[in-house]
Image (cartoon, rainbow, N blue to C red; front, side, top):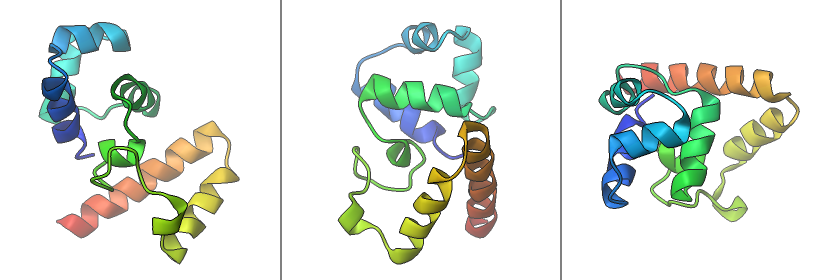
Length: 111
């Protein structure tokens, strides 16, 4: 995922060190640094923790929107709402796998 740029920007904008954020996530500082360089994928659980930490949406972290608090229902296209409705039917593991799959497709399209 390309959200490594956003997590670096958020950390810097909030005057946090990589060590502080790594401690919050419960991961070694060196591993968090790899996240910011885009060298490793952030787990869904850690992405949620980061979104809560910085008070932003997961959409913002994933660069799906430039609004820090995500899209409102009125801003969603019919297709976007269909995706959300589909995800709501999944359990946590299925939702994570579905989001990973969608991100892979998005990454292929961007290339």
